[in-house]
Length: 389
View (cartoon, rainbow, N blue to C red):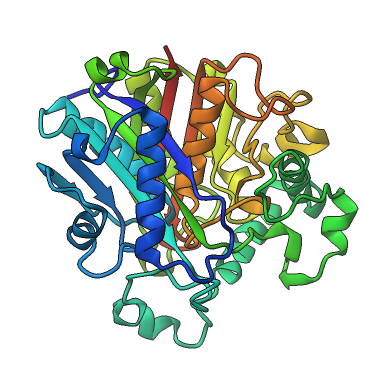
């Protein structure tokens, strides 16, 4: 069953905090839920579908439904795939709406790794119980080490340079300067990135995303409901999800599961990469963006480095503006799961509500994409294509 045009994003909200001292995770979930519903012009009583990940405390969606006051639920989904989970939630919400399981779906993310001093650990996940953990015991569980391997392999295979990686951060910083909530608002140069401390060769400190507290929420509705609301309508045009295994270490690090999730989303939407005027791309590290550009078809495999250089991702300058809120590299990466914020900015662009300095002129069809897990191992990719109506 295709979900094309069978569900609309009617409301969004991004929590302004980047450090949630004195705010519980449950309260963050409630805050973003109410914010997204207010943006849509709906109330808690309208919600009959709820979607959340493992960051929801207690018994997940069941506990949060009680805390928030969602007492009319007919559908509950707690899919967890890390950073891509919220792209999958939008897809699953659209599927549930198309199948008649719910009419108004609420999706929430909230976490506080800074205030809670949990570091890069993903909330609600028993990482010590993972069956592959004993084989990785000699390697500290810090994501940047794996992504450093991905970057180094891409350089070896295709001649990608540190300077090209740096251009991704430069583009994000040009956008973040216009976002009053962004954690890093200073515009940087390629040389600034190269001069920042080396973290995991070849990745420097400025090649890495920020860590923040906060959260966000999305409201997805039936088309009939969306048309009754006094908000710009954003149609879910296509979606795709895919898993890539690590195969016990026998893995090609030069591509991600995005080659499959993207193809599925484009096929369902009936568009091609050439039709996309704005892209929200997961940016845990600069190399993540380069791989996604290739895997989604915006350039050929191995040409991602050349594609991003010289400002090609900067709004108003480049061919494909990306992450115009500053992205995870500069703005917000709540709970170490940046897929939610990718959707939020894609919706803003599609509505024409991004900051005027970075708003893309032709913004009728946009893309959001994320990965969850590690590109150096097993992971899940999620792709959404949205269209203004």
